[in-house]
Image (cartoon, rainbow, N blue to C red; front, side, top):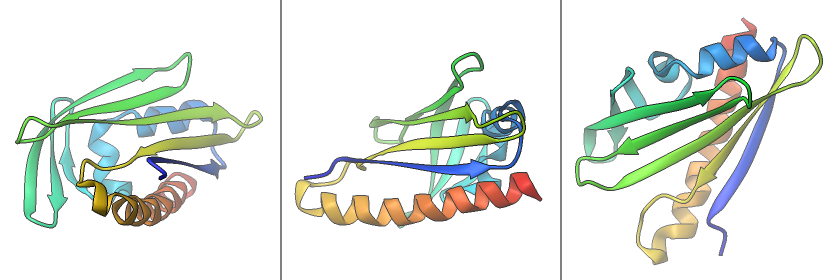
Length: 133
C-alpha cells in the first residue's frame, strides 16, 4: 500500500526567488487549496468539517533548499509537509513536494492519498502560474 507520493514542477524563475516565495507562510493561501490564512505561527485550514485553526511552524534552510511545515491540529495530531527547491540552470528551479498519507483509518488510506495527490498536482500548477506571471 502506498503511503506517500513525490511530485515536482519546473518553474521558470531563479531558485532563490522560488525559495523566498514558498518559504513565506503568508503566501500559502495564494497557491494551495486548504490554507485560508497563514502566518509564522498559525494557519486556518479548510476541511470537510469547516475551518480548523492549527499551529504552524515553518522550517526553511536556504542552503539546502528545504522548506518543511510542521502542523499541530486542534486534536493534538501532528503532521509535516516536506518540500525542496532545487536549481535548474541559472534562471530556473524545480520545486518538489513529498506528500505523506493523511492520518485517516487504514480502509480509507488509499482513497485519501489518491485524492490528495490530485489536489497537490493542481497546487503545483497554481504555484507555477503565480511565480511565472
